[in-house]
Image (cartoon, rainbow, N blue to C red; front, side, top):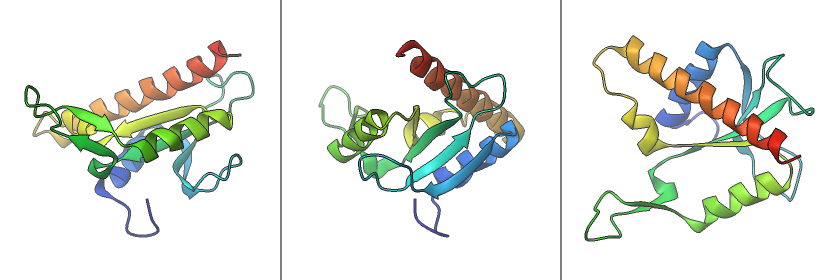
Length: 141
């Protein structure tokens, strides 16, 4: 995150959120456990929200959130860094449903030269992630 200098990942996620037609704010301070500002606070559409969960925190985790190539066997192995793991734990402890989108998984959805196809794939991916976060929140109550 960070002011006007939004990452390409954040700009791309914002484009997909707009395509979904959901409301969202970026770089928002949320209540709970002295959390740093979150990348996105997404407003869940009517009919989807449950148990009063109207908002979902969405974090865009770029390359700097992961250690890579730790294993000789798997040069593509990824391990989230401790600060991101702690942030996610604090967000959940504060009662926020959470979606984390990693740059690596986001980039894997860009499999076509057709930008419309990539946007469609990414939009469907986000919709599924938002639904899963809400369902997990309902199931935990």
